[in-house]
Length: 169
Image (cartoon, rainbow, N blue to C red):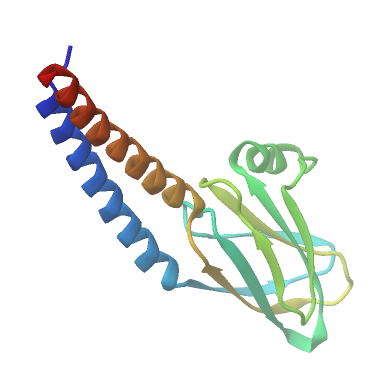
């Protein structure tokens, strides 16, 4: 059995770890991540995979398109297995399928992971431009991790004091 003093020590360490992680999560959540994606000519009825950051955090995302000549493109967002299926057969199911014209599109990334963006021009005209992606808000997985470490740390610390009191009696 673990001694009460060791249990209190572990509780203090885990609580401090949770506080530090909470502080860093708040600082990270207050600063948005902005990605600029420029693309060249996408001719009619064609697709173009875009280079994206390798890992997307579970945050809110806003996409602001600036397209030439008032064109429209469809944006397809894939996870890694579906992206490879798309490259092989063009018949994969995207996680998100959004029409980009001139409006800002917002959505939420639920799970941290690798995501791939493909632009599809189903119109007849060639389209070029840029897309500005803004990741904002608190990263939910880091928030849950910091809260869990705080709860476990306080539980260990409290149980260490309760076991100390029992041994004295």
